[in-house]
Image (cartoon, helix red, strand yellow):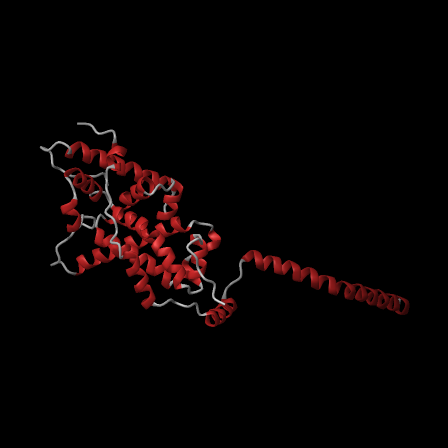
Length: 99
Length: 198
């Protein structure tokens, strides 16, 4: 005997009803079980401590490196040109004095 | 000032209130969904008493650890709760297996055998269907429960079970093959053999 009407057969499956007091029992048990409160202060401290030891993502390192490089480069740019000026004047002086 | 929960609140709003410690919101949620989830749990376990335990454990879990509800993931509460039920069921089976392996004197009880309370109430056809479901491996039974009985889409069921869509489709196909074979062998009273495709 072939049974291709599997869905029809499965649809005949009955499910018993839950006992009428099941929901109330769950609610009552929960009342006495209490609730886990998140430890906000401890979790914040823990997060800070972890952030000190966590190795940053490579892309963050590269981006930070580029930004720092540009900032330092811009700051020292003026200094370099001043150095250049000093150097050239030094050469000028020496050229004038020795040659 | 504490926000009062109302029966008109949707599930997601109630979960938000539960996170802030509202037992009233929890009560509304439990009363609203216990029957529905009991049905799903029964189909997964095949036993009314185990289904009750499963539903109770799952609801207590969301009460005690409401932070496991991640609203930003956009899942519907009911779909998300199926995942809790499925995971609780897996834990239950693992504990049972451990108990059996720890104590070889314990007789092995099929994890999905219908309880005695059901046995008396079931007619012959119901018994056949329950037996057919009971011989399916746990994951196949869960896949059939979620997709066929609970009406979840394949994608939702795959997400609930934590498997890829293809894997879920394969589980469904194997379950149907197993059920068909069971039907073809057991509808003939001369052939009482039970088997399923693993």
